[in-house]
Length: 568
Image 1: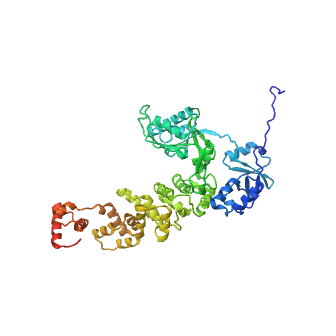
Image 2: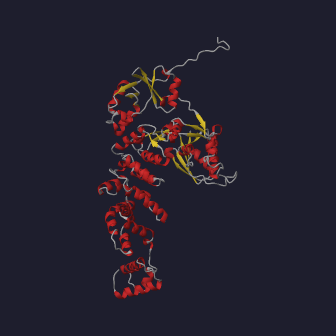
Image 3: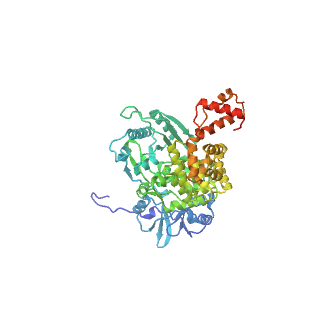
């Protein structure tokens, strides 16, 4: 019988309570295929590779299925895996796992006798509050603004709806990350442990807007929602709200779109790209503003580190390479060594049949509209990621010029497609067949492809525009005959004189038109057909070269032109 007031010793089960002894040790240089065969032969779940690397057998199987079977097993393994002695406590092991370690190797002396796998352990996640940051994201401005108040209202409404549907709701991704970095929060991403589509429809009843459903992924988007007019919110637009059911993902092939199935929040966070995007903010009324950070995102933000969540992250979804470049540039975060190695592994893998050209081109478009797009593309070149769209040997040499041209175009009100300009800058000087293979890989066809292919004319066009004595009308005729992409590429390759002429043409020259119309010319006796075009060309050249006459003067010019019988 227990004695009142007596202190009984607490039993510490030790590391053995968590350890899985099904571990095999292999040399790091052993191929994925051979390491997998050896592990399966002895029924292992984890393969230890040297002093601080390990890989799950399930991960080896995925790597083999994705064409990495001949790569060293160490290339697909976790790095810096901590080791603990057999006498370690369970509390210490859990603390290390909560700090971000994917697994622990248990050693008796120098020999690995087991592993503790975070994916198999039920961890109680510590929580902290972000309520102050949520309500006052701009510390330098004590006053709250209507957009911030509207966002807080939206998140509280979402939390109440989730509670009513017995489907807990969380804010995730960029909004949580930006709250912690001090940036203005991005659009709202919500994850629901339940039916995300039904939740989105219910939320839209409260905020208005249009719901777009993606049933196969269990996601929906709400566009056009507004906060209520009361409570000082004045109907502020809420921006885009994305809602998803919490899910786990399976990639049937490297680069393929994932197959999804319902899961809990922790599994949903584990499937994400980077630790800084794998945090969640609880929205239920009793926990509103509580932060869940199971994968060490806060620590990585403090260290300004960009860390992929697993070694095969970029192989399963190569578009994450573009995201890594965007986040590293936008946030000023440095990818850690393991992330850079994972990018290299993905880039060196030959071909991604399941990755569509359309998805690749979309990622190029996203990179091109970043505030520091040049640095994003420079990172992609440094990582050799242009191989993903068959652009081997891409050079960043013309990227500063492209940045300068885009800056001028914005100031001059000239519309330039930043993605096309970026691609032209990367491909200048590459052989035509390389350029064509790249366009094939990006599945560009029709007019977009024709515009880019016109860039191969840039060299000769730039040289002709460098000539000392060219009248404005001659410059206009040269550039009228060239697609705009050729003019942009010629600007990138040309000298100061060619660049000035191209800028004049894009901003002013191409808009110059005669005052007389084709109907006016017919009334003056110009025969229909090609002669009307020739007369209009003559009048345009006149105006380009400084003749800014009236309508009456243009009529006299046409009459003289008809009498002379000259062709344009």
